Amino acid sequence: MKLDILQWKEDLTRFVWPENISALPWWRLPLTRVLQVIFALIRDLLDGQLTLRAMSLVYTTLLSLVPLLALTFSVLKGFGVHNQLEPMLLNFLAPLGDKGAEIAANIVGFVENIKVGVLGALGLGMLVYTVISLLHKIEQSFNYTWHIKESRPIGQRFSEYLSVILVGPLLIFSAIGLTASMMSSSLVQGMAAIPVLGIIVSVAGNLIPYMFVIAAFTFVYIFIPNTKVSFFAALVGGIVSGFLWETVGLIFGSFAAGATNYTAVYSGFAILILFMIWLFISWLILLLGASIAFYTQHPQHLGLDRGEVTLSARTFEKIALLTMFYIGRHHYRQQSDWTLDDLTHWLGTPQNVTEIVLKRLHDSGLLIHTSEETPVYVPSTDMENMPIKQLLDVVRASGESGSFDSGQLPSEVAVEQLLADVDQSVAKGLQKRTLKDVVISAGD
Image 1 (cartoon, one colour):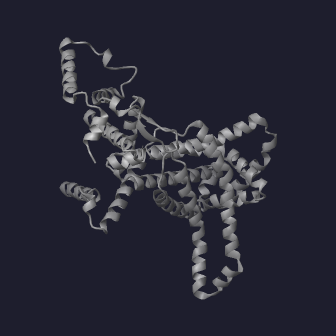
Image 2 (cartoon, helix red, strand yellow):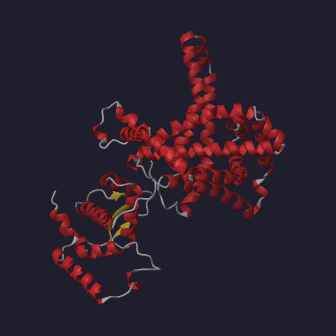
Image 3 (cartoon, helix red, strand yellow):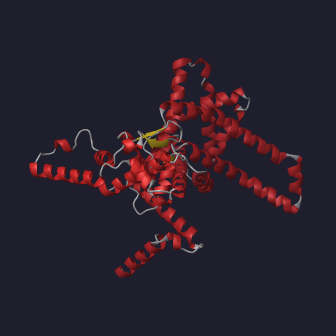
Protein backbone atom coordinates (compact mmCIF):
# COMPACT_ATOMS: atom_id res chain seq x y z
CA MET A 1 0.00 0.00 0.00
CA LYS A 2 2.83 2.39 0.90
CA LEU A 3 4.57 1.63 -2.40
CA ASP A 4 1.33 2.32 -4.30
CA ILE A 5 1.02 5.75 -2.64
CA LEU A 6 4.64 6.60 -3.43
CA GLN A 7 4.16 5.51 -7.05
CA TRP A 8 0.97 7.55 -7.29
CA LYS A 9 2.77 10.65 -5.97
CA GLU A 10 5.63 10.08 -8.41
CA ASP A 11 3.25 9.74 -11.38
CA LEU A 12 1.33 12.86 -10.32
CA THR A 13 4.56 14.84 -9.97
CA ARG A 14 5.69 13.78 -13.45
CA PHE A 15 2.27 14.71 -14.86
CA VAL A 16 2.25 18.19 -13.29
CA TRP A 17 5.99 18.83 -13.74
CA PRO A 18 7.03 17.17 -17.04
CA GLU A 19 10.72 17.28 -17.93
CA ASN A 20 10.11 19.09 -21.25
CA ILE A 21 6.91 21.13 -21.05
CA SER A 22 7.42 22.61 -24.53
CA ALA A 23 7.11 19.11 -26.04
CA LEU A 24 3.60 18.58 -24.64
CA PRO A 25 0.63 18.40 -27.04
CA TRP A 26 -1.35 21.61 -27.48
CA TRP A 27 -4.32 20.39 -25.46
CA ARG A 28 -2.24 19.36 -22.44
CA LEU A 29 -0.07 22.48 -22.13
CA PRO A 30 -2.84 24.78 -20.75
CA LEU A 31 -4.01 22.02 -18.38
CA THR A 32 -0.46 21.53 -17.09
CA ARG A 33 0.00 25.26 -16.54
CA VAL A 34 -3.30 25.49 -14.66
CA LEU A 35 -2.33 22.56 -12.42
CA GLN A 36 1.09 24.11 -11.78
CA VAL A 37 -0.50 27.45 -10.82
CA ILE A 38 -2.94 25.69 -8.47
CA PHE A 39 -0.03 23.83 -6.89
CA ALA A 40 1.94 27.08 -6.52
CA LEU A 41 -1.04 28.86 -4.93
CA ILE A 42 -1.57 26.04 -2.42
CA ARG A 43 2.16 26.12 -1.65
CA ASP A 44 2.05 29.90 -1.12
CA LEU A 45 -0.96 29.59 1.20
CA LEU A 46 0.72 26.86 3.25
CA ASP A 47 3.83 29.05 3.46
CA GLY A 48 1.70 31.44 5.55
CA GLN A 49 2.98 34.74 4.15
CA LEU A 50 -0.16 35.49 2.11
CA THR A 51 -2.49 34.96 5.07
CA LEU A 52 -0.15 36.95 7.33
CA ARG A 53 -0.11 39.88 4.92
CA ALA A 54 -3.88 39.69 4.43
CA MET A 55 -4.34 39.95 8.21
CA SER A 56 -1.94 42.89 8.31
CA LEU A 57 -3.95 44.63 5.60
CA VAL A 58 -7.16 44.08 7.57
CA TYR A 59 -5.67 45.99 10.52
CA THR A 60 -4.35 48.76 8.26
CA THR A 61 -7.72 49.00 6.50
CA LEU A 62 -9.57 49.48 9.77
CA LEU A 63 -7.26 52.40 10.60
CA SER A 64 -7.30 53.95 7.13
CA LEU A 65 -10.79 53.27 5.79
CA VAL A 66 -12.47 56.42 7.11
CA PRO A 67 -9.62 58.79 6.02
CA LEU A 68 -9.55 57.13 2.58
CA LEU A 69 -13.29 57.52 2.13
CA ALA A 70 -13.11 61.08 3.47
CA LEU A 71 -10.73 62.07 0.69
CA THR A 72 -12.85 60.20 -1.86
CA PHE A 73 -16.00 61.86 -0.47
CA SER A 74 -14.42 65.32 -0.78
CA VAL A 75 -13.51 64.73 -4.43
CA LEU A 76 -16.90 63.29 -5.32
CA LYS A 77 -18.68 66.12 -3.49
CA GLY A 78 -16.90 68.63 -5.69
CA PHE A 79 -18.51 66.97 -8.72
CA GLY A 80 -21.89 66.45 -7.07
CA VAL A 81 -21.81 62.64 -7.08
CA HIS A 82 -20.92 62.05 -3.42
CA ASN A 83 -24.28 60.36 -2.82
CA GLN A 84 -22.91 57.35 -4.71
CA LEU A 85 -20.46 56.56 -1.89
CA GLU A 86 -22.97 54.70 0.26
CA PRO A 87 -24.26 52.47 -2.60
CA MET A 88 -20.64 51.53 -3.37
CA LEU A 89 -20.07 50.54 0.27
CA LEU A 90 -23.36 48.62 0.32
CA ASN A 91 -22.23 46.68 -2.73
CA PHE A 92 -18.91 45.79 -1.10
CA LEU A 93 -20.58 44.82 2.18
CA ALA A 94 -23.50 43.02 0.55
CA PRO A 95 -22.28 39.59 1.79
CA LEU A 96 -22.90 40.81 5.35
CA GLY A 97 -26.62 41.29 4.66
CA ASP A 98 -28.45 43.65 7.03
CA LYS A 99 -25.28 44.00 9.10
CA GLY A 100 -23.49 45.30 6.00
CA ALA A 101 -26.07 48.04 5.58
CA GLU A 102 -25.59 49.02 9.24
CA ILE A 103 -21.80 49.14 8.86
CA ALA A 104 -22.07 51.17 5.64
CA ALA A 105 -24.37 53.68 7.34
CA ASN A 106 -21.97 54.06 10.28
CA ILE A 107 -18.94 54.53 8.01
CA VAL A 108 -20.72 57.13 5.91
CA GLY A 109 -21.73 58.89 9.12
CA PHE A 110 -18.08 59.02 10.23
CA VAL A 111 -17.01 60.31 6.82
CA GLU A 112 -19.66 63.05 6.76
CA ASN A 113 -18.57 64.21 10.21
CA ILE A 114 -15.00 64.76 8.96
CA LYS A 115 -14.76 68.31 7.65
CA VAL A 116 -11.60 68.40 5.58
CA GLY A 117 -11.74 72.18 5.33
CA VAL A 118 -11.42 72.69 9.10
CA LEU A 119 -8.76 70.07 9.80
CA GLY A 120 -5.90 72.48 9.31
CA ALA A 121 -2.61 71.79 7.60
CA LEU A 122 -1.44 69.25 10.19
CA GLY A 123 -4.76 67.39 10.28
CA LEU A 124 -5.00 67.28 6.50
CA GLY A 125 -1.40 66.08 6.30
CA MET A 126 -2.10 63.24 8.74
CA LEU A 127 -5.21 62.34 6.75
CA VAL A 128 -3.21 62.08 3.52
CA TYR A 129 -0.36 60.25 5.26
CA THR A 130 -2.76 57.61 6.62
CA VAL A 131 -4.12 56.96 3.14
CA ILE A 132 -0.63 56.84 1.60
CA SER A 133 0.43 54.36 4.30
CA LEU A 134 -2.45 52.05 3.38
CA LEU A 135 -1.52 52.07 -0.30
CA HIS A 136 2.16 51.58 0.56
CA LYS A 137 1.29 48.55 2.69
CA ILE A 138 -0.67 47.13 -0.26
CA GLU A 139 2.29 47.78 -2.56
CA GLN A 140 4.66 45.97 -0.17
CA SER A 141 2.36 42.93 -0.16
CA PHE A 142 2.20 42.93 -3.96
CA ASN A 143 5.96 43.44 -4.21
CA TYR A 144 6.46 40.35 -2.04
CA THR A 145 4.36 38.37 -4.48
CA TRP A 146 6.38 39.72 -7.41
CA HIS A 147 9.74 39.11 -5.65
CA ILE A 148 10.52 42.84 -5.70
CA LYS A 149 12.78 44.17 -2.96
CA GLU A 150 12.35 47.93 -3.41
CA SER A 151 9.19 50.02 -3.14
CA ARG A 152 8.51 53.23 -5.03
CA PRO A 153 10.51 56.30 -3.94
CA ILE A 154 8.57 58.41 -1.44
CA GLY A 155 8.03 61.27 -3.90
CA GLN A 156 6.68 58.90 -6.53
CA ARG A 157 4.36 57.35 -3.96
CA PHE A 158 2.65 60.67 -3.18
CA SER A 159 2.24 61.66 -6.82
CA GLU A 160 0.98 58.31 -8.13
CA TYR A 161 -1.10 57.28 -5.12
CA LEU A 162 -2.85 60.63 -4.84
CA SER A 163 -3.58 60.69 -8.57
CA VAL A 164 -5.38 57.36 -8.24
CA ILE A 165 -7.23 58.44 -5.09
CA LEU A 166 -8.40 61.68 -6.71
CA VAL A 167 -9.08 60.52 -10.28
CA GLY A 168 -10.01 56.86 -9.67
CA PRO A 169 -13.37 57.47 -7.98
CA LEU A 170 -14.46 59.83 -10.75
CA LEU A 171 -13.69 57.23 -13.42
CA ILE A 172 -15.42 54.47 -11.46
CA PHE A 173 -18.62 56.38 -10.84
CA SER A 174 -18.63 57.77 -14.37
CA ALA A 175 -18.44 54.23 -15.74
CA ILE A 176 -21.18 53.05 -13.36
CA GLY A 177 -23.41 55.99 -14.27
CA LEU A 178 -22.84 55.50 -18.00
CA THR A 179 -23.66 51.80 -17.73
CA ALA A 180 -26.80 52.48 -15.71
CA SER A 181 -27.96 55.05 -18.31
CA MET A 182 -27.36 52.59 -21.14
CA MET A 183 -29.23 49.77 -19.40
CA SER A 184 -32.23 52.05 -18.70
CA SER A 185 -32.32 53.59 -22.17
CA SER A 186 -35.35 53.03 -24.38
CA LEU A 187 -33.24 51.14 -26.93
CA VAL A 188 -32.05 48.57 -24.41
CA GLN A 189 -35.54 48.28 -22.91
CA GLY A 190 -36.92 47.67 -26.36
CA MET A 191 -34.32 44.98 -27.01
CA ALA A 192 -35.21 43.36 -23.68
CA ALA A 193 -38.81 42.98 -24.85
CA ILE A 194 -37.69 40.78 -27.76
CA PRO A 195 -37.50 37.11 -26.57
CA VAL A 196 -34.03 36.19 -27.83
CA LEU A 197 -32.42 39.59 -27.29
CA GLY A 198 -34.08 39.83 -23.88
CA ILE A 199 -32.07 36.83 -22.69
CA ILE A 200 -28.86 38.44 -23.94
CA VAL A 201 -29.69 41.73 -22.19
CA SER A 202 -30.52 39.87 -18.97
CA VAL A 203 -27.25 37.90 -19.07
CA ALA A 204 -25.30 41.09 -19.84
CA GLY A 205 -26.95 42.84 -16.88
CA ASN A 206 -25.92 39.98 -14.58
CA LEU A 207 -22.35 40.00 -15.90
CA ILE A 208 -21.82 43.76 -15.52
CA PRO A 209 -21.01 43.55 -11.75
CA TYR A 210 -18.43 40.88 -12.53
CA MET A 211 -16.97 43.03 -15.30
CA PHE A 212 -16.57 46.04 -12.99
CA VAL A 213 -14.87 43.93 -10.30
CA ILE A 214 -12.58 42.30 -12.89
CA ALA A 215 -11.68 45.71 -14.35
CA ALA A 216 -10.92 47.10 -10.88
CA PHE A 217 -8.77 44.09 -9.94
CA THR A 218 -6.94 44.22 -13.28
CA PHE A 219 -6.13 47.90 -12.77
CA VAL A 220 -4.82 47.20 -9.24
CA TYR A 221 -2.59 44.39 -10.51
CA ILE A 222 -1.11 46.66 -13.19
CA PHE A 223 -0.65 49.76 -11.06
CA ILE A 224 0.28 48.64 -7.54
CA PRO A 225 3.40 46.42 -7.99
CA ASN A 226 6.63 48.36 -8.44
CA THR A 227 7.34 46.63 -11.75
CA LYS A 228 5.98 46.44 -15.28
CA VAL A 229 3.01 44.06 -15.33
CA SER A 230 1.69 42.93 -18.70
CA PHE A 231 -1.99 43.58 -19.37
CA PHE A 232 -2.62 39.91 -20.19
CA ALA A 233 -1.16 38.69 -16.88
CA ALA A 234 -3.12 41.30 -14.92
CA LEU A 235 -6.31 40.41 -16.80
CA VAL A 236 -5.92 36.70 -16.04
CA GLY A 237 -5.44 37.50 -12.36
CA GLY A 238 -8.36 39.95 -12.47
CA ILE A 239 -10.73 37.44 -14.09
CA VAL A 240 -9.96 34.64 -11.63
CA SER A 241 -9.98 36.84 -8.52
CA GLY A 242 -13.05 38.79 -9.72
CA PHE A 243 -15.18 35.68 -10.21
CA LEU A 244 -13.79 34.21 -6.98
CA TRP A 245 -14.64 37.38 -5.05
CA GLU A 246 -18.22 37.51 -6.33
CA THR A 247 -18.75 33.77 -5.78
CA VAL A 248 -17.25 33.74 -2.28
CA GLY A 249 -19.37 36.82 -1.51
CA LEU A 250 -22.54 34.82 -2.21
CA ILE A 251 -21.33 31.96 0.00
CA PHE A 252 -20.29 34.32 2.78
CA GLY A 253 -23.67 36.06 2.55
CA SER A 254 -25.41 32.77 3.31
CA PHE A 255 -23.02 32.17 6.20
CA ALA A 256 -23.55 35.67 7.64
CA ALA A 257 -27.34 35.35 7.38
CA GLY A 258 -27.28 32.20 9.51
CA ALA A 259 -24.55 33.27 11.94
CA THR A 260 -26.91 33.73 14.87
CA ASN A 261 -24.38 32.11 17.22
CA TYR A 262 -21.97 35.02 16.66
CA THR A 263 -24.65 37.50 17.73
CA ALA A 264 -25.51 35.44 20.79
CA VAL A 265 -21.88 35.11 21.93
CA TYR A 266 -20.35 38.43 20.86
CA SER A 267 -23.43 40.66 21.02
CA GLY A 268 -22.64 44.05 19.43
CA PHE A 269 -19.12 42.95 18.47
CA ALA A 270 -20.54 40.33 16.07
CA ILE A 271 -20.87 42.97 13.33
CA LEU A 272 -17.23 44.01 13.69
CA ILE A 273 -16.04 40.39 13.69
CA LEU A 274 -17.99 39.54 10.51
CA PHE A 275 -16.71 42.74 8.90
CA MET A 276 -13.11 41.82 9.73
CA ILE A 277 -13.59 38.27 8.42
CA TRP A 278 -14.97 39.61 5.14
CA LEU A 279 -12.09 42.10 4.88
CA PHE A 280 -9.61 39.25 5.41
CA ILE A 281 -11.25 37.11 2.72
CA SER A 282 -11.31 40.05 0.29
CA TRP A 283 -7.62 40.85 0.81
CA LEU A 284 -6.66 37.18 0.55
CA ILE A 285 -8.52 36.86 -2.76
CA LEU A 286 -6.83 40.03 -4.02
CA LEU A 287 -3.37 38.67 -3.08
CA LEU A 288 -4.12 35.29 -4.66
CA GLY A 289 -5.06 37.09 -7.87
CA ALA A 290 -1.75 38.96 -7.72
CA SER A 291 0.04 35.59 -7.42
CA ILE A 292 -1.86 34.30 -10.46
CA ALA A 293 -0.84 37.39 -12.46
CA PHE A 294 2.78 36.89 -11.36
CA TYR A 295 2.90 33.21 -12.34
CA THR A 296 1.21 34.01 -15.65
CA GLN A 297 3.90 36.54 -16.52
CA HIS A 298 6.78 34.55 -14.99
CA PRO A 299 6.03 30.81 -15.36
CA GLN A 300 9.68 30.03 -14.59
CA HIS A 301 8.78 30.63 -10.91
CA LEU A 302 6.36 27.70 -10.96
CA GLY A 303 8.96 25.52 -9.27
CA LEU A 304 8.67 23.14 -6.38
CA ASP A 305 10.32 25.64 -4.04
CA ARG A 306 9.09 29.20 -3.55
CA GLY A 307 12.02 30.34 -1.40
CA GLU A 308 14.75 32.67 -2.56
CA VAL A 309 17.01 31.11 -5.17
CA THR A 310 20.49 30.35 -3.82
CA LEU A 311 23.16 30.87 -6.46
CA SER A 312 26.49 29.14 -6.41
CA ALA A 313 29.55 31.32 -6.95
CA ARG A 314 30.03 29.84 -10.41
CA THR A 315 26.40 30.41 -11.47
CA PHE A 316 26.38 33.98 -10.17
CA GLU A 317 29.66 34.67 -11.96
CA LYS A 318 28.29 33.35 -15.26
CA ILE A 319 25.02 35.31 -14.99
CA ALA A 320 26.96 38.48 -14.14
CA LEU A 321 29.32 38.02 -17.12
CA LEU A 322 26.41 37.30 -19.47
CA THR A 323 24.61 40.39 -18.17
CA MET A 324 27.64 42.60 -18.74
CA PHE A 325 28.17 41.04 -22.18
CA TYR A 326 24.58 41.62 -23.36
CA ILE A 327 24.44 45.17 -21.99
CA GLY A 328 27.87 45.95 -23.46
CA ARG A 329 26.98 44.50 -26.86
CA HIS A 330 23.78 46.50 -27.19
CA HIS A 331 25.60 49.63 -26.07
CA TYR A 332 28.43 49.05 -28.57
CA ARG A 333 25.98 48.44 -31.43
CA GLN A 334 23.84 51.43 -30.35
CA GLN A 335 20.81 49.19 -29.98
CA SER A 336 18.02 49.68 -27.47
CA ASP A 337 19.24 49.52 -23.88
CA TRP A 338 18.31 46.62 -21.63
CA THR A 339 15.61 46.71 -18.96
CA LEU A 340 15.15 44.29 -16.08
CA ASP A 341 12.26 42.52 -17.84
CA ASP A 342 14.21 42.22 -21.10
CA LEU A 343 17.23 40.68 -19.39
CA THR A 344 15.05 38.33 -17.36
CA HIS A 345 13.39 37.05 -20.52
CA TRP A 346 16.67 36.79 -22.45
CA LEU A 347 18.62 35.05 -19.70
CA GLY A 348 15.74 32.75 -18.76
CA THR A 349 16.38 33.40 -15.06
CA PRO A 350 13.80 34.20 -12.34
CA GLN A 351 13.23 37.95 -12.12
CA ASN A 352 14.50 38.20 -8.54
CA VAL A 353 17.79 36.55 -9.62
CA THR A 354 18.26 39.06 -12.45
CA GLU A 355 17.41 41.88 -10.04
CA ILE A 356 20.03 40.69 -7.53
CA VAL A 357 22.72 40.47 -10.21
CA LEU A 358 21.90 43.91 -11.66
CA LYS A 359 21.86 45.48 -8.19
CA ARG A 360 25.27 44.07 -7.32
CA LEU A 361 26.76 45.16 -10.64
CA HIS A 362 25.28 48.62 -10.11
CA ASP A 363 26.48 48.86 -6.51
CA SER A 364 29.94 47.75 -7.64
CA GLY A 365 30.12 50.62 -10.13
CA LEU A 366 30.07 48.49 -13.28
CA LEU A 367 26.61 49.59 -14.42
CA ILE A 368 24.51 52.72 -14.22
CA HIS A 369 20.79 53.03 -14.82
CA THR A 370 18.40 55.81 -15.68
CA SER A 371 15.91 57.21 -13.19
CA GLU A 372 12.93 56.47 -15.42
CA GLU A 373 9.91 54.49 -14.24
CA THR A 374 11.35 51.50 -16.13
CA PRO A 375 15.12 52.04 -15.83
CA VAL A 376 17.54 50.91 -18.54
CA TYR A 377 21.10 49.75 -17.85
CA VAL A 378 24.34 50.79 -19.58
CA PRO A 379 28.06 50.31 -18.76
CA SER A 380 29.36 52.88 -16.30
CA THR A 381 32.60 53.54 -18.26
CA ASP A 382 33.99 53.01 -21.74
CA MET A 383 34.21 49.28 -22.34
CA GLU A 384 37.86 49.46 -23.43
CA ASN A 385 38.61 50.72 -19.90
CA MET A 386 36.86 47.74 -18.27
CA PRO A 387 39.30 44.78 -18.05
CA ILE A 388 37.64 41.39 -17.67
CA LYS A 389 39.97 40.61 -14.76
CA GLN A 390 38.73 43.70 -12.91
CA LEU A 391 35.15 42.75 -13.74
CA LEU A 392 35.69 39.26 -12.32
CA ASP A 393 37.27 40.66 -9.17
CA VAL A 394 34.33 43.00 -8.61
CA VAL A 395 31.80 40.20 -9.24
CA ARG A 396 33.55 37.85 -6.82
CA ALA A 397 33.74 40.53 -4.12
CA SER A 398 30.16 41.73 -4.56
CA GLY A 399 27.70 40.89 -1.84
CA GLU A 400 30.30 40.81 0.93
CA SER A 401 28.97 42.18 4.18
CA GLY A 402 30.54 45.34 5.49
CA SER A 403 30.56 43.81 8.98
CA PHE A 404 32.52 40.76 7.84
CA ASP A 405 34.76 40.22 4.83
CA SER A 406 37.71 38.09 3.79
CA GLY A 407 40.18 40.51 5.39
CA GLN A 408 39.01 39.46 8.85
CA LEU A 409 39.89 35.81 8.28
CA PRO A 410 43.12 34.31 9.64
CA SER A 411 46.15 34.93 7.43
CA GLU A 412 48.11 31.80 6.48
CA VAL A 413 51.09 32.23 4.15
CA ALA A 414 50.42 29.01 2.23
CA VAL A 415 46.77 29.90 1.61
CA GLU A 416 47.56 33.51 0.70
CA GLN A 417 50.19 32.30 -1.79
CA LEU A 418 47.71 29.86 -3.30
CA LEU A 419 45.13 32.62 -3.82
CA ALA A 420 47.79 34.89 -5.32
CA ASP A 421 48.79 32.12 -7.74
CA VAL A 422 45.16 31.71 -8.79
CA ASP A 423 44.84 35.46 -9.42
CA GLN A 424 48.06 35.50 -11.47
CA SER A 425 46.88 32.53 -13.52
CA VAL A 426 43.55 34.18 -14.25
CA ALA A 427 45.25 37.48 -15.18
CA LYS A 428 47.69 35.68 -17.45
CA GLY A 429 44.91 33.69 -19.12
CA LEU A 430 42.80 36.76 -19.80
CA GLN A 431 45.81 38.70 -21.20
CA LYS A 432 44.38 42.12 -20.34
CA ARG A 433 41.22 41.51 -22.36
CA THR A 434 38.48 44.09 -21.92
CA LEU A 435 34.73 43.93 -22.19
CA LYS A 436 34.95 45.60 -25.57
CA ASP A 437 37.32 42.84 -26.80
CA VAL A 438 34.80 40.17 -25.76
CA VAL A 439 31.91 42.02 -27.44
CA ILE A 440 33.86 42.49 -30.70
CA SER A 441 35.07 38.86 -30.70
CA ALA A 442 31.46 37.65 -30.56
CA GLY A 443 30.81 39.14 -34.01
CA ASP A 444 27.27 39.44 -35.28
